[in-house]
Image 1 (cartoon, one colour):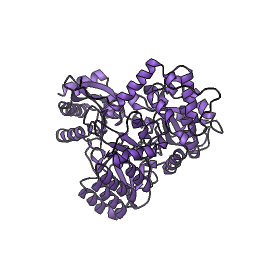
Image 2 (cartoon, one colour):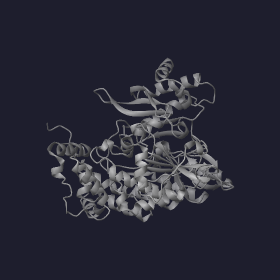
Image 3 (cartoon, rainbow, N blue to C red):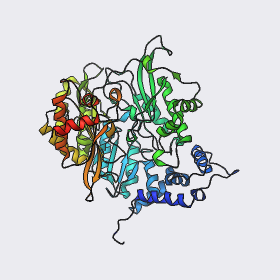
Image 4 (tube, helix red, strand yellow):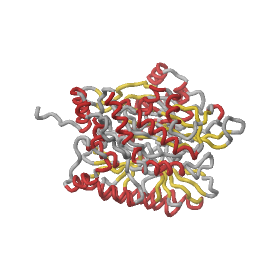
Length: 582
């Protein structure tokens, strides 16, 4: 008995909720009694929603009880006291710290990870270099670029957490609401404002919504996390159809039910980890309406999202229960006028985005200027590399760095005459501006070296896999390969050409993957289909090499993509074809 491993914080939260359910949670979490004052401030709409579940005889989950008992933004003194003792939080305080962007990631690392917020995922060189200094002084000396075009600082000791948070704010950034049950980093087109093909610059919209959230405390503490993205129609995708709300810019010509011009189509309920994309709501909104519409959608979710089952506490499940028309009707009650209905067929089709357009050198709409897509191996950057990239952006561009959902970054506004020098400077940092068809979109979540949920070392294995495939297969068209360590699917494996979901195999817990193919987003929207289960990583590179060779030998012509090839075959056919390749 004494040798058993202690419960993780996640297990403690689960056990706490389970025991409350057995003994009757409503006794531990009483509904607000008649005549008793409900909080009049930002917490009111959340308390009223919780009370409705309690009145219906349902048990609030542990996270809801934690939010009900203590506002996470009133914890600064506790956090300072913990830091003075170099002590990590315990119990549900682990969850509440995520409201500040701080994730206690034990047992993978006995440390905090800190995630940020930045509108449209754009930073200036001063901020980027400043984050490098903070990561070096208070963390592990590196950052990870995420699939929400965000940054994570890792290996933060509790004694350093407040100083890190203060340093982030002093750079003009914030981590407020970057984790837990909140609206996450607002993403927009990575090439916003510089793309020759975009329909609209998403930066002002991301900025407006970012500050709207920061200044409305009632928009924190949702039933669960919430993602919002704006696609401006540019050359680099933002995967808005994987978000709870996706705003997609469209051109509407004269003669339709709405005036001609640029509108946003609205999509609701994306959560590819649960096998679903956001669905078109049949409405369009003007750019100046987007913030109000997003606010209304979030408020309807706050009032009606599930507070008793974390697995069902996302917007998708409200939509599944209600249907889009009922949901839209509730949203419209919070708006000054009904939303404009318009069939998708009345909008001009979006120009396809370039599959690997986030790497390499590309012309901007501004004459004589280029943006440079820098390849970051599995999204990780050392502090010295960060400072070097900040210097490149300042010396050769406008000092602007743009993160993408493909775990890399762009340096914009580089004059033609400085391209060669900028490229050389990037290469001296051990980075590059070109990649093979395999490496161009090799995406990996944190993996089990930094995340307690992951079954596999996704980042380390992604590098080994890319090395092997580049040696064995001369792939001539771009392919997206995404490795995720658990079903949370932070690496979006379900919408990749090849999606690899980490797993433990057998009694020895061998690291391996379930393999799916044929996923895609936007114009190629599809959930990947599983072809193999429980493939040990030791066998995976050879299997995938055979799979890609089979595709190249059997594709209809030299232009047929892997996505198109898999789409015209059944799962049984693909298994047979790939098995024959050895």
